[in-house]
Image 1 (cartoon, rainbow, N blue to C red):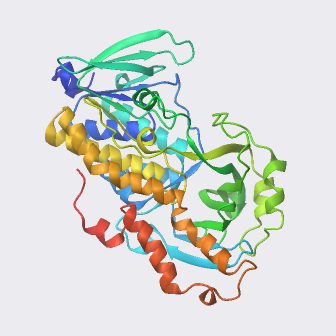
Image 2 (cartoon, rainbow, N blue to C red; image 1 turned 90 degrees about the vertical axis):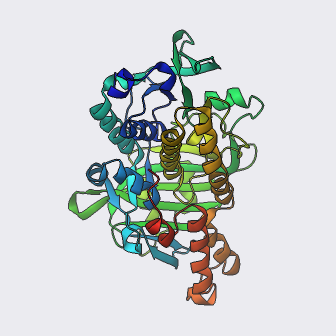
Image 3 (spheres, rainbow, N blue to C red; image 1 turned 30 degrees about the vertical axis):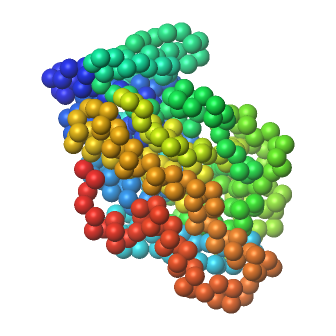
Length: 426
């Protein structure tokens, strides 16, 4: 039991369902503010699963303010630039990232599982192992006179495990959230855009700066890659994603997020993508393992907060992995929610204030990502120059390129000047 829990009644405890990036960041933030909490996670063992992600400077700022600057630097690489290329390998646009662009904080390319374990380890070190309860999946909740009562079950057997009383419930139980399904029973499965993603990790040569995030192609055939670690012999551990459009009857909705992909399904459309900066087919061929995922999101909601419970992270706003904003927005959620709990107390009013501060902003990012976010520059160039180009200025002006990049940054809360000069969330 944490110090805050020892000195506080149950009605002041925040019950967090889900130990993903959103839930763990929230727990660490509450611990930092002395607000009592307990985290319940459906899986019986947290393991470093997943693939590479990027954390943008506005989220890295919050990680630093949690006192984890050294820890994240030890497991991630500071992204130096993002670069967009045509399907013929021609450079469309590049821009520096993180501190290289003038932010006060870096952007990190990092393995999602390592980030989750870093947050978990920090939480246990600061608050004790007892604040994290594993093997307990959220089933239902009911408001009481003093707060809220939450029931948890074994995810596999459905057997009732425990009933917990607290002041509030925050559900961060992912894209297939049980809490969201209970609130919106008619919503149905996730929204599929008609794109499948094959993801893998390969060892390969350092390309461009050695810290470059690169994107090539168009929305229906796109290759994204970036290093997430250095390897021996001057090579990189490269995280890559290959997107391919599929017909409406494609069996995308098996909801198996660890489905192993087949090399023959992904390699042929990229077989001739041997660019001077990277041999794409070789990177695909040498992957340790390939996973196949549908590119899905959830429709924006008109409300996250319902009385003494609210949604956070993917449970609230699952988005397409475009613009590197899913995990970053989850971290911002956690920090803003903690601020409102600090300012309003462990009350439904705090949850309403959080909803008001975050929901419309993040919904706008969800919709922007459906329109391909900053990646839409690839499609614009392909429409104007389907066979490639010699000089990009003959296809799209530098001002148009700059404006496209700047508009998404502003929408996602990543404008350099604004972020550098705005006060801390907490």
